[in-house]
Image (cartoon, rainbow, N blue to C red; front, side):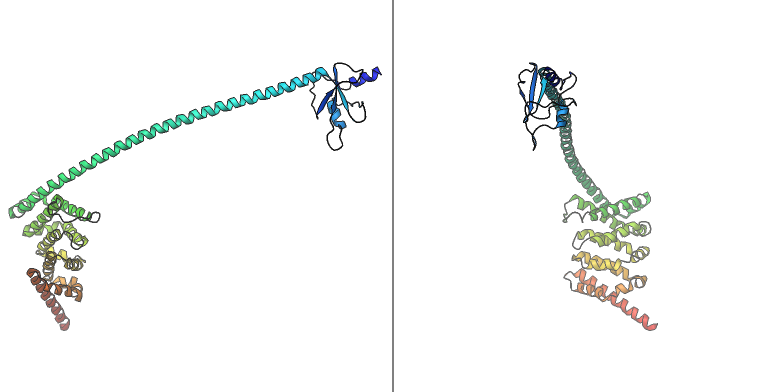
Amino acid sequence: MRELRRRRTETFPCSSTRRLEPVGNYIPRRAPSGGRRDTLVLRKETVGRRGGTSTATRRKMSGGKPVAQSYGAKDDFVRVRKRDLDKLTTERSCNKAQTAQTMKEQLVKEQEQLRQELLHLQSRLDAAQTECQKEREDKLLLRDQLWQSGIELQQQADFCSALGSATCSLLWSCSASEDTITHWLADGKLKSFLAVAAQTLESFVGSLDAEVKTEDHNSQEHQFVLALAGTITNIAALPCGRNFLSSSVHILLDTLMKLLEQMKPGVFPKLKVLMLMALYNVSISVSGLRYIIENPRLITLIWSLLNDGDWEVCLHSLRLLQSVLLEEEALLLLGSSLLDPDFQARVSHLTSSAKPSLRAAAQQTLEDLHALQQGQGCKQISL
């Protein structure tokens, strides 16, 4: 009997280096009578469908050795030393504590990492806000400087307009003297002045598309442009001046005809009149007239000006047309356009104008057109 008990006791030797792994739910019980005091009997509760503990499970718990079965047919018991059970309980407690400590250390580490990231993002946010505030201040400063520059630019523009108006008004008055024009031609600066004048007129007319301007006789800008055009007209009124314009300053003549075509009907009629007068004065010269006739859009330009609505513009357009009709080559270059019935009808309509000068000019022009048409018919009959 003692031998059997000894064998049952040694069936589950618990080494200090071997950890027991619980397989199910175990309930400690007292050892049967006659057992050792330092040994506990554990009963595995019935699990699974059939109940009981499998042989493989019992062998695992016993370190691979066969497990003795006793104490009845219903329950299976294993005998374990109390110190081993206490050691197992201690190890489990230590493992739980170690796991909790590891998780705590990980959480602390993650919190520290998140705190560092937060500090980094906060520093970036502060830097961005500082930069944004600086840019806002710079923007306000630039806006103030731009506003101040706009005021200064407007003041300079007003000053230049006033200075140009006063200077060109003096030039306009001085250009009425033949000696002054002769002196300007001898000085050699007249060509550069006329080039600047052409650019100024072109820039002014080009701005009419972007801005709606009304004719203000008191504005410095308008007086400046009118004085430039008047000076050009006075230069072309003298033989030496018109010869110079027709031979050396063709770009000015092209600019005047282009601007007259660009300007809308009824806009700045006084400026149109001065430019038409300048072209008429140039046409008095043979070389100037031939250059003007070579422009393929000349009749189209005159036709549009006859529909301008301002009687002075129509009058000076008719005078330019009369000067063109005096040239024998005009019929060869512009014959089909001059003999257009609609063009003659427009001239005929002006013969009923209320202005005597315009009515007389239209009547003379219409007679010249009829004479030109009859001469063309006689040439065709003779041929």
